[in-house]
Amino acid sequence: MELVTPEIGLVFWTTISFLILFFLLARYAWKPIMGAIGEREKSIEDALLKAEAAKEEMTRLTGENEALLKQARAERDLILKEAKQVKDQIIGEAKAAAQTEGNKIIEKAKVEINNQKAIALADVKNQIATLSIDIAEKILRRQFEDQQKQDELVTDLLKEVKLS
Image (cartoon, rainbow, N blue to C red):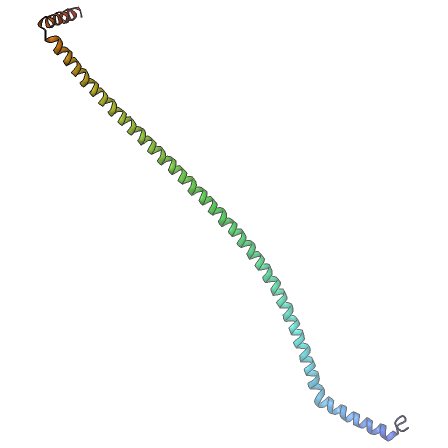
């Protein structure tokens, strides 16, 4: 029963041993242990602050990325719109140039046709004149073969000249 009811000497030496151990721990071990705990708390707190700062930075970067994406989309839309306008302008200019060139070719063709027509008409007139002269020459030769017919023709012509 000595353990359940300790004697005074045991309590005294146990208390002295405890106080010496407490003094040694307080003097040599307590400060390093508390310093290590404090450093650990500080490093955890710093890590939490850094994590929070990183989270805020990520939020800010995400917002900036979204703004940049919106700006890039707007610029892309603007570039596409300008490209469409340039394309339409080039097509319009090409159509106008083609229309002008086509009109010039048509006018040239009309002038050429009129020139060819005039040349053909002049050629036909020349041929008709040549044929008429040939026919008239043949008719006159036949009529002038006979002297009496020649005299009658001259008389008729003189009558027409006097009347005119």
